[in-house]
Length: 165
Image (cartoon, rainbow, N blue to C red; front, side, top):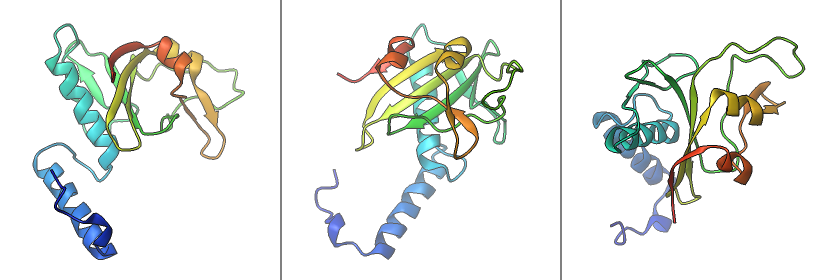
């Protein structure tokens, strides 16, 4: 598709302009609403996938700025969607800190992990319940919040929505 473009010969400014064109096109097409490109592309892909696969709930994007969730089902179930190209998700804020004796207030019913390869090809879409999330969440000391590892054990205890061959 882009074989005729020599990306290595592009200047830094040309690469930035190309990125801006991609961001603006994605925004104009309704794929993203903010500048969190990878996160929002993952959210859009997950929502499209859920809405086009029979047996999966139909999802709608949560309003911009909604805390803790990214999508809502027709039944009112709340979904947090985390997009990653590594072996760990982004962080989940608003939960009790490590070592707290207080029980976390349920922030969502499901976490969906949208996993990309280093080349941003879709590797998998994995759905975890709130309870499974609580079981596998890990403390990220640098930002004082929780995240999820994306490893074999977590994937085995998730509902695999999509997995690349």
